[in-house]
Image 1: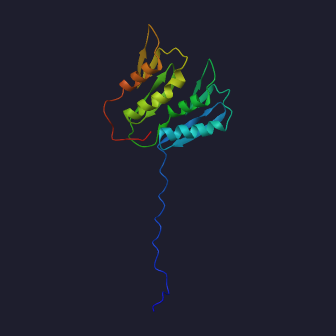
Image 2 (image 1 turned 135 degrees about the horizontal axis):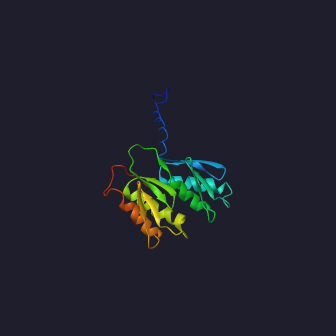
Image 3 (image 1 turned 180 degrees about the vertical axis):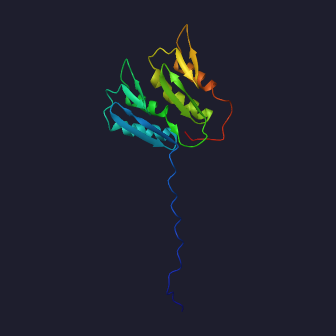
Length: 177
């Protein structure tokens, strides 16, 4: 009988893939607390923000920094969900050539990157938290000002206005938001 002296060669495990770089980042602050968050999708960024805000006291946050721009919530304070909506609505795409829409709502900035579908889905999830209870009649989108003189816009009308200013069709860039 033949006996084995050596073990058969084992296949080498594959080299681990380097981690994918984050597709979205946010840098700013809540009151005096610096905030640096990232995620591969906007949903991951929102989840990272919710985890971050669960570790800090957000009861009295009315000053937010987005990049280097300071924004104040004059009439009230933002809760954790609203703060995370601010993060998502002002995330920077790290992938080159991602289409985006930028502007402001009553002076509050937004910049959303992704396909038309991603932008619309993101706005539907996050914009109502920011405009709830406010009277919105001044909006700027991609450098163009819009004023609703006789009345005010609700969240659904604002979303429709912003999405209507994006080019139609799908982009080569697709994201699982």
